Image 1 (spheres, helix red, strand yellow):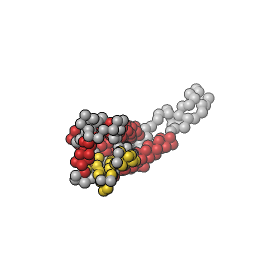
Image 2 (cartoon, helix red, strand yellow):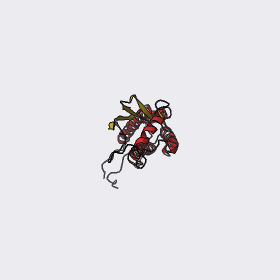
Image 3 (cartoon, helix red, strand yellow):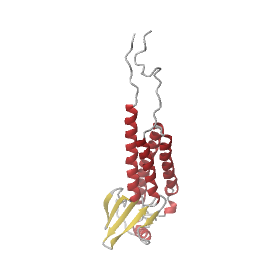
Image 4 (cartoon, helix red, strand yellow):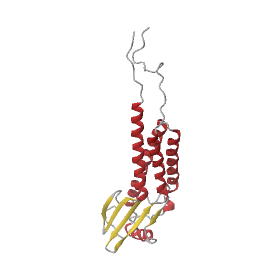
Amino acid sequence: MPVTVGRVAALGGTRQRVRLGRGPRVLAVLAALLLGVVYVAPLWNIRLIAPQYPEGLGMHIRVNTVEGVMPTDLNNINGLNHYIGMRTIQPDAIPELRYMPWIVAALIVGGLLAALVARRSVLFGWAGMYGLAAVAGLVDFWKWEYDYGHNLDMAHAIIKIPGMNYQPPLLGSRQLLNFTATSWPGAGGWAAGLSMLLVLAALVLAARAAAGSRPIARPSTA
């Protein structure tokens, strides 16, 4: 009897699940462990330099708090913000700082689980959640900067410039009156970026391995 066209080789053509190779698993573990750096190093740094503050004022934005580079920096920044109508930066009042440590912990566990289970579906699912969390974190940070820099209390502001906003840049530098504001990732942010690159590398290796393991269809025979 004729065999159906396109039936795969290996009698019956049952497709086998392919486990992750060593490369993607090792990369997933390294990516997960690198995320642990955010618990000990700042995610982002914002620095303000002006003639009256030649040594600058700075903030470290960590996974669970915001603190001054120097012990008095955050108080000094809040004092300056009062003059232009910006709200006081109070870490305890920022809800994201309460649940961010748990999100990072879940991503670390997810990466280790993906390496342990060694299934492509788990790896791709974890990578998708990781990507969504990273994008959501950056968008939320930008919105936080926008809110502080645009929603001003002009009724109590001492310095009032119509149309002026004081949103610091997400990346790079911006002139805000006589202050130059500079914003760059901290060591924790660079570690998270490197972790994401390792995740992408793991996905590429897993996809190549899957493409190479697909069964080859045999032509029909009479």
